[in-house]
Length: 114
Length: 113
Image (cartoon, rainbow over all chains, first blue to last red; front, side, top):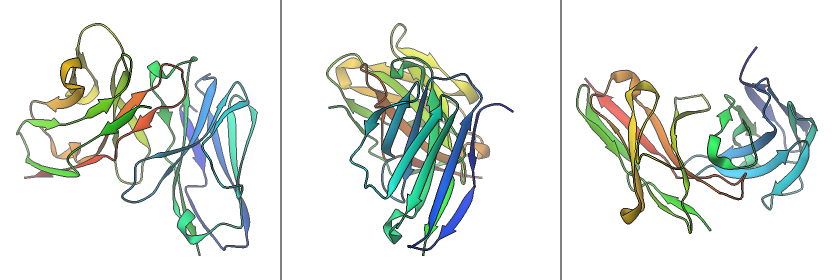
């Protein structure tokens, strides 16, 4: 299996639930990212991990908790979400210390908070 | 801080016609520039990238883009559009410090028969 794989593809959760999104990359990349894509808004960078270390937290509310156990796996733990958190959550990976190579994205998890 | 502007929210072109999608960026140094495409329900796919050298870059699916430093632009072009090109297109600027690529708001392309 190649590329960036995200599971689940769709998730509906209540505001009091706890769920996790999973991302896995088989490209040997060292950096992994979470982006949020809401309707009519640009992609928002949430978190960046480089060699398992978090290098960026873009003022994301604490109800979103990332975890990166190794360079191939990235999780986003969700709890006590709000309806405005409904969006497409995209995982991406890249190789190298700089942005020059571009990113490989997964297909995303469509999250609906009810 | 870097920023990206895509002036057109949506564009409609006829199949077989040429296409140009506009992108303007703001960045203090020579930027890393990208175009991505997103089909409905999918993630983004990298079409092409620029960070040095020839200012006209070729990408996948017959797309090309030209970097114009004087105009702070990186417009995407295709000589003949196919119905399968209907999608949303994102311009992005990368940070030479790494890991902070910023995306434009996107341009949705509609292709009419």
